[in-house]
Image 1 (tube, rainbow, N blue to C red):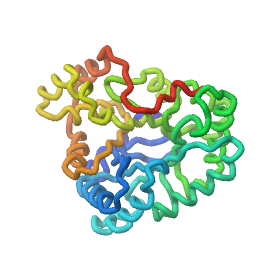
Image 2 (cartoon, rainbow, N blue to C red):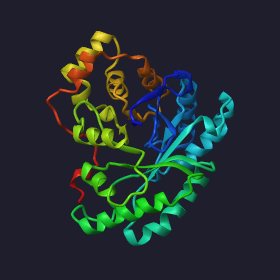
Image 3 (cartoon, rainbow, N blue to C red):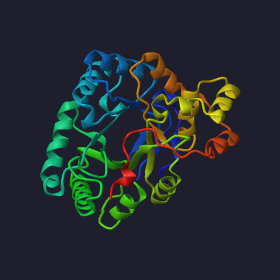
Image 4 (cartoon, helix red, strand yellow):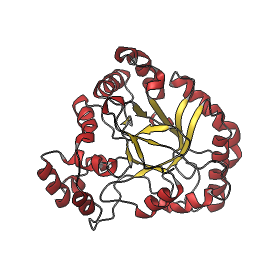
Amino acid sequence: MTATKILKNQKGEGGPKVLLNSGHLIPLIGLGTYKIVDQTLMDSSVDAALKCGYRFFDTAKLYQNEKQLGNSLEKLLPKYGLNREDVFLLTKFSPFPAEKASEEVPKLIEESLENLKTNYIDLVLIHCPKPDENKNEDKEGNSASRKINWQALENLSEEKVHSIGVSNYEVCHLEEMNKYLNKKPAVNQIEFHPHFRRNDIREFCKNEGIHLQAFSPMARQQPELLNDPVVKRITEEHKTTPQKVLLSFAISQGIGVVPKSSNPEWICSNFDSLDLKLTVKDLDELNNIPINKNYIRPTPWLVL
């Protein structure tokens, strides 16, 4: 079983899905909710997403909007004849120092369950490879934290958390996990786009059966990426938008995306990227742009 095999492609059911190593299906496109904290704005965003066809929503403790997302889904799922089981919920948490993780992680999950108004979460990710209070170079402390936080996730009831994974983990962090894990991470969510393709992580995750997911797949609308000559040529050739090209770049390769937007028009436009079929030549050119540049703040490769 590989994490990138696309099993279903019904656009009306949330779009194409892949089978995670946990045995659960995850849509390849979801709505990112970063910075959507106003309840009215969350309502309109979720409403637009459900109407367009999204069935996957991405949040995090850091975003401080789990309650808002839970409220919106409780109100809006019935509007579209949907139940909780029809949508996929992902949340993330920043890891605790090793001495606190075993006690604090279960408490945090209970809080997320309450916030999201659900009795289970489809996927929980450790948001980064070190606690906020640790320094990047604290190898011993960071390593111990990663281990204990992961073991705390493994110990959670699968009835409450269906799948577990990580975010911003480098190959060195994933290799380290193999020494102590009982369950492989189902997902690694990272910065990924044509200017930052992370071939080492892609290859490792492919070999290990870990589904790769891209946050900020459009690099938060960085002009340097949107106006890249290769992106522009493909955009013009397909009579589409650079945003759809960037989303399709990931999706076409079995890499999940969680584009963030609170604009109903953009939310639907992003979902419609599923209709764009890039050619082998398109993908080859995008995969060979001679730029290797991250645009988003996390720099996990500096974390020991």
